[in-house]
Image 1 (cartoon, rainbow, N blue to C red):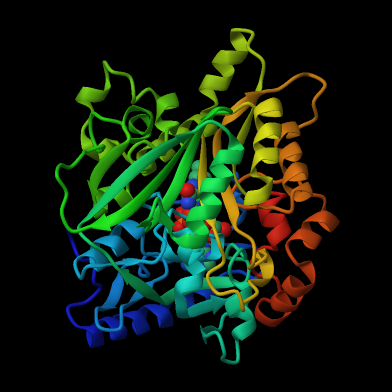
Image 2: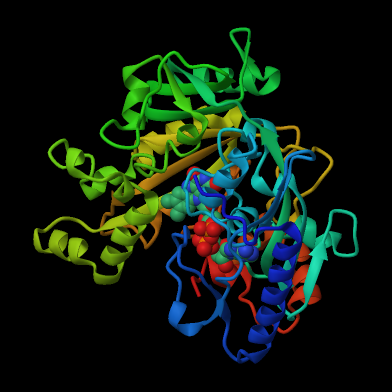
Length: 465
Ligand SMILES: Cc1cc2nc3c(=O)[nH]c(=O)nc-3n(C[C@H](O)[C@H](O)[C@H](O)COP(=O)(O)OP(=O)(O)OC[C@H]3O[C@@H](n4cnc5c(N)ncnc54)[C@H](O)[C@@H]3O)c2cc1C
């Protein structure tokens, strides 16, 4: 394990950070005001196609690393482009973890806060932005501001989540941490219907316990309409054995094969990264003839990203499918939230009209009911279930572009849910701004990016500019 502290002492790290901030400010000033700006970052977990050629890259490579982990107050001071992989390594060394650790190793802290990460602690802790104490941000108008919940820029504190870098870039964030134990004991419960899954989720979310024992982690997988596995996890000090899903064995398959399991805390946090949930199957790496020969360093979501990126640039597979007379396919890669009481309705629609399986289930409840997160406001008294599905669906000639994604947007809205914006979206402008609080966004844009140097949220997430 490496601890990615940016300097040997906290004082030194703060000085290094200050120099990097000054350089970034000058770099930003020197960019042309006529072209949009984008982050020049090595990794991304954004599925929308973006027109990178149009935008000027802002070099933020200096903003990766941990300034300080404070084990007494259980906080960490972290640079905005630090990946969760590095952050987790730095905090686990102190027996601590971020309150919510998104599943993919290269998601960065700033990306998860502005783009709404989620994971199996979200039924207790909400999303990553809900454990941010304060942050520094380079705003669209070139200022570097420190943003706190009650300070002069409190509007940016509550308006930053779901802004996707269109108001400013988080350069440093101080976050709360939670204590861990060395191991996680898992129990996998099969249920036969969405109603049964919903009632288990309701019970665990309300009581934070299952069958009389405390629950620290909660998620699940829908394999088919009558086969859903709910997984509960709890911290333990000792484990009778440990499973390893970083090489030959595959985590999601284990959910159907066993009722209990033990993982180290680190392996638990990255259990979904090794096979990108199950999406690595499409890339051939789960094949039993290939798998034993693949080194661990290749079994990672960022490697799969590169493979998918190559296909998207060159389109060799879609070209080959067309030559074979196969129907074109629509990518359906989305995460949505629906109230737990509407889970069964959503899944009935989904099985009938979309037909992708598996789906990932992750319960979510807002951590602090008194806050309104302006651009992605959830009902604080409602338990939601995040559903993730990442595949493609055959399209029929009569269907308009984005047919299946549009249907998902419609049904999620009918059921009182929300859709994440990291992937393709098809909303009409009026509809989009009514869902994502256009009135407040306009005020924030005027305040922090009046000349529109950063893209507008609609342009970025729907028009894909
Ligand atoms: C297939 C797939 C599955 C996913 N599954 C999950 C999941 O299970 N759990 C989960 O939590 N999330 C998931 N995500 C969503 C992911 O968390 C978000 O897309 C997140 O924003 C990615 O962060 P990143 O650091 O990789 O940022 P990038 O992909 O580089 O950027 C995402 C957006 O955030 C902006 N941004 C990045 N860094 C900053 C910053 N420091 N300040 C301001 N803006 C910034 C960028 O401008 C961009 O608009 C998934 C995404 C995909 C494509």
